[in-house]
Image (cartoon, rainbow, N blue to C red; front, side, top):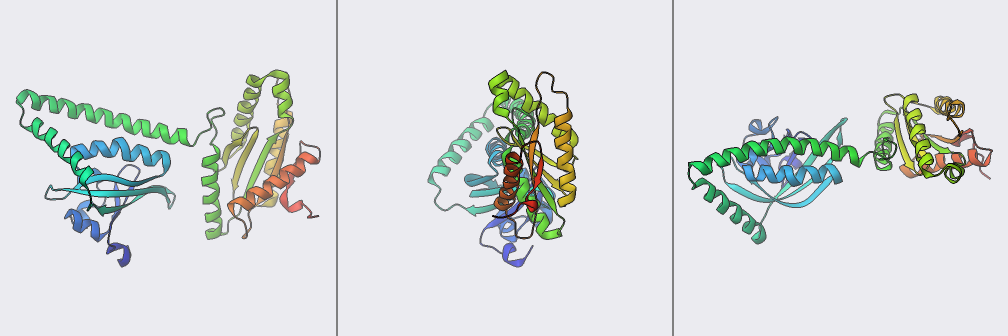
Length: 327
């Protein structure tokens, strides 16, 4: 960690999705009265009271998994000498070195009247519990066991939420949001390594006539079956997603122009030759291979132009954007 971040006027820590501390700056160590080796590789929950652990798992984790960030969350850490330290907590979830991490910034709160009211209410409730009889202590133990069970359930629900946030509900493929995130990651990887990738946009020919002839339930079935075919023909490293309507997108890591055209032709021919029972479908495909000048918008635009050329050229064909002649 560079000295500017280590000595920044705000606390900083980075955790894995499982809540394990990966890095922490000196400012936060000074706030919490810990040494660096006491925190690194340990769960972030060790710096929290039982109440704030529950708050952290109930609000922070689900929110950042669903939206990718948390802004100005009122929170309270516990110092090594067991003093509560109210803070404003900002976090953002992203990928670093191929793994999901959550980077957080901590600011000690100065104006905290509303938060202190909440803390006071929590302390009052805890004092009532601690002053209660042995029966109340037993109830607290029971509640703690129940909390552990609910915490496990929250982990399971968080995983479900993450899956739902990136999955198309009809086809089971990844959705447009996931595709856009992966496209940005692919562009960044290309800029760093120079290893090319290609993008396919696949559109079902005359899909409206299928809906008009057989009805929307059959149209949905066609989309589902095509999604299964595309996924079965793809490699594990390929990103297959539903872009919207009857359009699908596929990112082909490592594929140059010629490899991408061959792959697209395989998708096209397998779709055309498959037994679709009482109906038949074909697809038109636009292909673009990344260049140094490409952005997220430009490569999608190039693939879209190539798809339009396939459509206007008679459908059931593959067109690479490099073959388009500007008029």
